[in-house]
Length: 192
Image 1: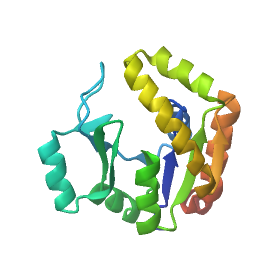
Image 2: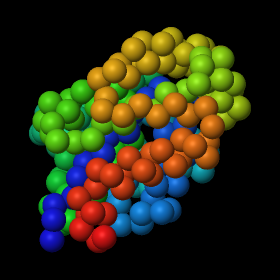
Image 3: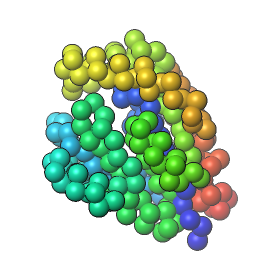
Image 4: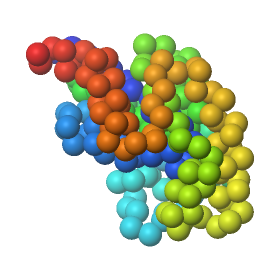
């Protein structure tokens, strides 16, 4: 059985990474979406171990010291990290792994796993990004302002990725992400 491939999907908060990944997983259910750890509080409807592993800062820092994360970063004032062991187990078990992470974490993964496929999801504009963030209704005005500042900086990193998907038309962006996956996955190619 071929080893799985790691796909790193990054981009600003609110760019639509999660929505695009949902469609990819619907079409390719053997791909596995890694569950990240975070120190931020759960949002309404989020469950520990499903959307995130919600940890306190001390526990998170212990995991950093123990080398338990493939990558980790502080984003928007909270810590986020990708548990290393589960990613490696899935890849070695013959499953493609999808990481939905921030730009800082993606750089760390690229250093450790240069054969990973980097995909940057870009919002059509900062105005549209602000509209999406406000529409979620989960962040305060100051949090939205911070996310928009970060988005300006993060968008400069798009050139570091093998692929850039501009999420200006949801149907087209979904098709583009799924086509990238099909083209880059050794497992999909082996099934053909």
